[in-house]
Image (cartoon, rainbow, N blue to C red; front, side, top):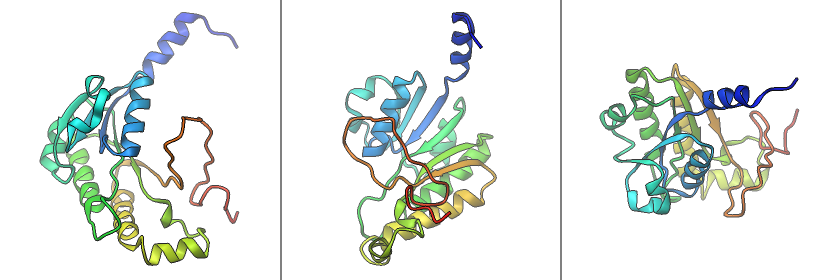
Length: 192
């Protein structure tokens, strides 16, 4: 099947989204924001520290705020097609940022009538990590895992159209566009 240029242009125009990215200044958030902008999407970066956006600051709409605040989130949601949360824990110590922000995000989205949510979680929650992964989950990464698990429970229990991604390894290397995906399992280790 062939398409003329006008058909392709009209189709591409339908794919442009208005995205609210929560946590756009972290390692994953900066990459998601950069790729969304380069893909032609309209991005609002909801961040605590706008200066951390660097050069992206001039390519996105920036809104400073607290992802734990339902009111702040609800105020900026109108006009967006989807929310992407790339929040991460501040370290391995006790934290509730993921679960608290998930509760606020879900409440704000439901109140604003927005249904599409994508969240980045942690691979340490996969059951098929092996012995070393399970030991890490129960010890060093216990707080991160508990917070992420509670976040996932909040998202799953919501009435939203959600996707949860658990990337097993994030690097600072060049973009490869090669991905391994396995639903419910650590990629490459599926028991199915």
